[in-house]
Picture (cartoon, rainbow, N blue to C red):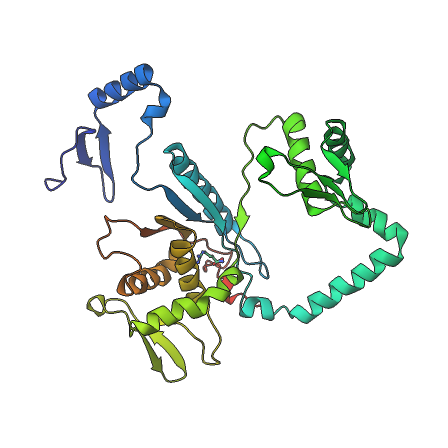
Length: 345
Ligand SMILES: NC(=[NH2+])NCCC[C@H](N)C(=O)O
């Protein structure tokens, strides 16, 4: 307790039973902050951070496995962090790093999924009843005619020979948006517009946030770049049938496996590629990962590898930086941790 640094924000700290510390905020400090807020406006309350852009990697379930309450926790915590950063005027890229790659997906037999898709497409084209049902399946489809009519009434829709397109003016910077395809089908864009349109008047929402799914597979093209950079720096070693990164840091971190015995890429290699991409292409200065604490070691190794490669400064008070926000493990009925990565089907 005696070693705690002093702060005008804190009046006192005391130990309250095993494992608890009470931190009492200073009433004077609170009064001063509220006074500032009243005179200067709520916006001035947000702490100013020295980062311009942050990435929050959260939610991130695996498409070929059951989603569980842990992913929900990650979603809630990640969204909260993203909102706090946005409040502090940081440009936040919300990233749902879905597990759409690796054994979990190949286990599902992509071939079978493709076959399933082909069969239903044939049925869609040949069976009118099925087609009608399928087209109604999207929740927002009933809104499409309404919102297209509104856009049409405003003179925004152009009936080109083929598809209907929405001309976007905005200083001609944007490309036209396809509303219906050549065969009269609604496009992906019209479903999005209908969703937006129906939510505004019907649900009276004030803020709609779109989260970009950037699955693990997106970064596959960057794996060679990332691994090559690490290799050039002499960080990758062959270890029996696999390639590993021996991370030094006083040997506190065990080696990181970056290829599997069959030569394939693994969770760590896609992770490093994602980090490489986020730093170099997306220019994020702070990357925050929200998962359960079970992945702490994984992130520790990834961050240590990135530091050894010089991607991140060794000094953690400097940017760019990475943080792992870990929450408690979610246990199944059997009292064991839910491990989507090793779940058997
Ligand atoms: N960049 C990351 N590793 N994000 C978290 C991914 C979480 C993983 N899909 C899981 O369910 O365990």
